[in-house]
Image (cartoon, rainbow, N blue to C red; front, top):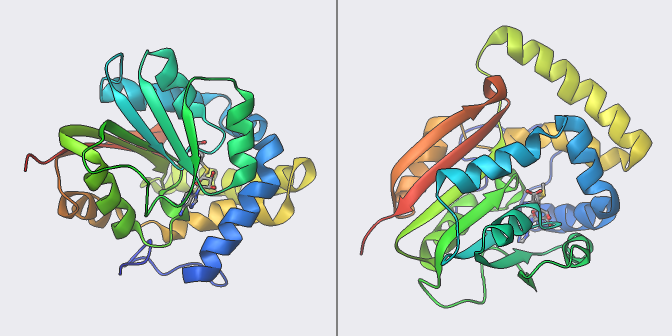
Length: 242
Ligand SMILES: C[S@@+](CC[C@H](N)C(=O)[O-])C[C@H]1O[C@@H](n2cnc3c(N)ncnc32)[C@H](O)[C@@H]1O
């Protein structure tokens, strides 16, 4: 089993394995009520633009069956529904799913782990996953589950944060992400959660390793797009024909 990152050393004190699963679920249950508002605030609304871009880049529309893994409060699910797709959202945190339910969208919502989604093989034409890769305990298992869920040629879109490559951008971004965000997060929501947020980036494998993991799981045409000077990333891919 490959932990979320097989290469990057995790920031000291971050949980791993079963403890990580427990901590992450409890944390998202706690922050669920203000999750959407703080996302919009911290990204100045860019998070929704990136979700739209993710759906655009794999052409989600009517006729698709989209599985939104780690759907949270359903931002991606709602946008996919608005395009006429049928959507199934899966998440382990009951509090986050309650937020998704409150939207009153047509998506089916399932409480469960993304490593074991209760759907048959090749059920989906598209799988999406927003800002969650670093929260998984074993990324290779989740990627394998994404491949299992997709029909041959099915499309994948993964969004997450990233570490900017430019030293200047990295400096400015780290001031914001590691100082401002935790302080505001503590004031408006939950201190521990918004301390974890910037540190959790260290769970992500370096870009090349991450793309290699996606290919290894059974994907081709793997593409990486850098968003906002490298502070976020979008990976798209196609399920290899079997
Ligand atoms: C940062 S939120 C992202 C939510 C949403 N996708 C978005 O774009 O805002 C991460 C989500 O991953 C979920 N999550 C983390 N590990 C999970 C797992 N193993 N199975 C299911 N959901 C998981 C959390 O409960 C949380 O809702």
